[in-house]
Length: 262
Image (cartoon, rainbow, N blue to C red; front, side, top):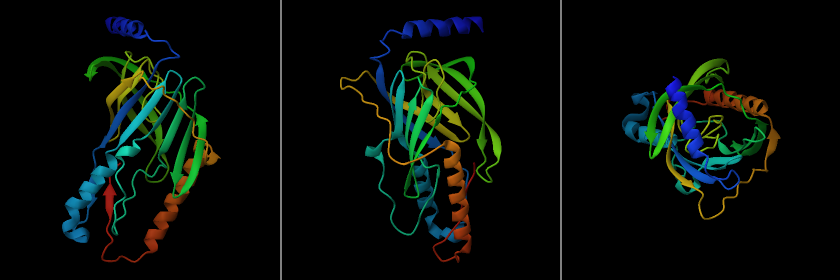
């Protein structure tokens, strides 16, 4: 363990070679999710393969983390966003009001602009303080040497809003001395290049450091201001309203049920 700590310190010392005010970059992340899907084949007929392909695309997305030492924005790469699927099939997934996430590491706060069923919200709250456990395990991601870190966190259950424990595994590199990462994750002595929890993995596929064109990081400002707890309550209410609405509908020839684990 002492040897691992010495190695980590050497990486930290050798990596801090760029001015904190000048240091900036763009990291590209790709998401993947293993789907535990049950589809009633009697309801979908010969459309099973088509539905599986559409669901897979829904969970494979590309995000951009634009960062400097103190701030960042994290949002889906709009240039790669596929057009909405036509026809009568509608897929609802990741109903978390996903949108642009702004983090201020110095002030330990975040602002997330989220569109939930056509209404824009501006979630303002404090960054969570994670109790990361640092490990001596290492692996290479591209040209960067990464160290392993894990944490146990309490999250809402998908089914009834109750709490459950979730294990998060991160791989970070002190060679990029930014205490940041994808989604809401931060607080490690280096940029997080890979993170996984439940059945989802987020992996950095490209990094551009100190590009010639100056990066401008702007905090989103439009939307109804709420806290994270207030937004979660609104979202849970909408989910229950949708469940009630679909239960009242008669089953037709084009309706079917898809169960996605976790």
